[in-house]
Structure formats: structure tokens, C-alpha cells
Amino acid sequence: MLKPVESLSIAEMVVYPLILLANIFVCLRHGISRQAGFIFLVIFCIIRIVGAGFGIASGIHPDNISDLEWSAILGSVGISALLLASMFLLKRVIDEISDRLPKHPDAPESEWIKVIRYIPIVGLLYRIVSRRASATSYRSKFLQILTLPGIAGLVLCINGGTEQTSSTPSKQEKGKHLVEAGLIIFLVMYVCLVAMTLHTATQIRRIPVGEKRVLVCVLFSLPLLLVRIMWSLIAYFGHSKTFSIMNGSSHAVLVRAVMSVLEEFIIVIAYTVLGLMIPRAYDHHQGTESGMKMAEQGVGFRQQGDYRGRG
Image 1 (cartoon, helix red, strand yellow):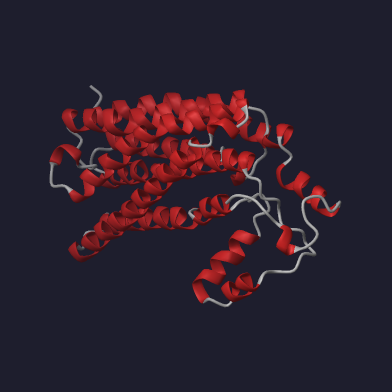
Image 2: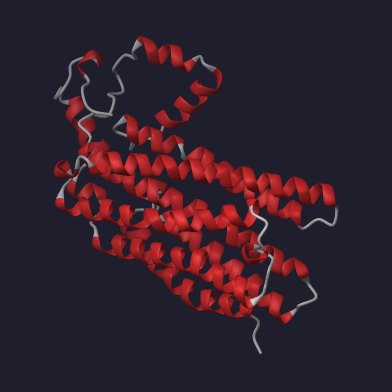
């Protein structure tokens, strides 16, 4: 008879390869770029497939505890990909309603930008973000900056999970703290995502009809993301065995399925269907390319001081 963890892993192994194929098609349709957001869904599906493989292996080889551990580790890091996918979908909407034109290559930098460049950490973040040509507003740039802590949180969770598989108590404790740090980063990212989404929703009258579906989809995902993050926080910061990622009992697996797996599945399906429905971003709003053409023709500004728009 199959164990609960093994049954859940088999279900994921059946579903996610199909979703992966659909998202590969979506990425090819929208462009294989993290700016489109859909590439993170591909990464998420791969994480879930590999994690499900370890979960199935843990049932076949019950004496090999590392299979169950890696299944739990991969099960806890997928939230980062969903957060990043949500942020870049929101960025797409923000770029649609932004009045700010991309900076012309020959335009002089303002004095405050020159000062920022020489601030150690802030200057590094600015240089990283300024190379991303798709950002047309300050809110877009802020969402792009959040990619860095998102990746950092992912690395912390993976590294921490690896440390927890050690037989040394000190390393296990260190690994737990690393995962907790990663989860706190994800929580901060979520709060920023909620604030940015709600602020964008106040400008819904300016959003093109087609892009309203993107905003609605992100709004729909917010409570699901919250439940998913809360499950992880309770699992690591709480002391309940029911929420323990290493607990393979029927009750614990059921809680995980209801508070984690189900939410992830609904979000991925919603984003995948959205990707199949909406047009490519440049099909209806030329974004950076059209803005740059306007800039080259002298439309909207003559010098740096003429740039106007909303961030």
C-alpha cells in the first residue's frame, strides 16, 4: 500500500509534466525571458517534478531518509518562483499604465543619479536594474530589485535544507536558521507584492482591457500565496508535528496538500491559462522599443529634465 507522501508525489508527477509542457509553449509564445514572468513557472514545475521524484523514491527505499529530506527541501523552495512570476506579471501591468518613457541613450544623467552610483550597495543595485531595458517606471524598477532577495531567499532555503540533512546537530540548527531567514525574505516580498498590487488596482481605469485580466489573476493569487507562505512559516517557526515537513503521517500530508500543494496548483493553472489567453506584451504596447523610437524622434522630451511620468 502506498504511503501518503508517496501518493501525493505520484499525483504531482502526473500533473506537473503536463503543466510544464504547457508553460514551455507559453514561454515560447511570450519570449523566453524572465521579464515575461512565465519562465518562473517552468522553473517551478521542474522543482515540483524533481521533488515528486524524491518523494516516490522515499516510498520505494524507505531506509534512505535523504530521499524524503530532499523531497521536503524542494517542496519548501517553490514559493520563490511563484512570487517572482507574480511580480513580473504585475510589472507587465505597471508598464502598460506608466507614462514614463525609457531613458534615451544620449540623455545626460541627473545629479542625484550620479550620487547614487557611488553609494556602495545602492549603486550596485542601481547598475543591475538600469541594465534591464524593460523597466519604464520606478515601480517596475522596484519589482526588478526584488528579484535579488528572491534569489537570495531561494539559495538560503536550499542551503539550509542541505545543512539540515547533516547528522551534526550544530549544522542542523544552522540549516534551520538559514531556511527561516529565507522564509522571512519571502514574507517581505509578499508584503511588497500586495502593496504594489493594491496600489496598481487603484489605477484600474487606466489599464487596457486585456491587461486587466493579468491584474485580476495576480489579485486572485494573493490569498493563495498567503496561505502557502503561512504553512511554511508555521512548519519552521512553530512546534506542531502536524506542520512538520518531515512528518509522513496521513494527517500531516493532508494538511500539506490543503495548505501548500493545492494553492500552488491553483496559482500555476491560473497563470498558465492566463499566458495562453493574453497577447505578447509588445503586440499591444510597444514598451521600451516604442518608447525609445519616440525618444529618438524627440517626442516627449528634448533633454533629461523633460522626462515626465509616474513611477
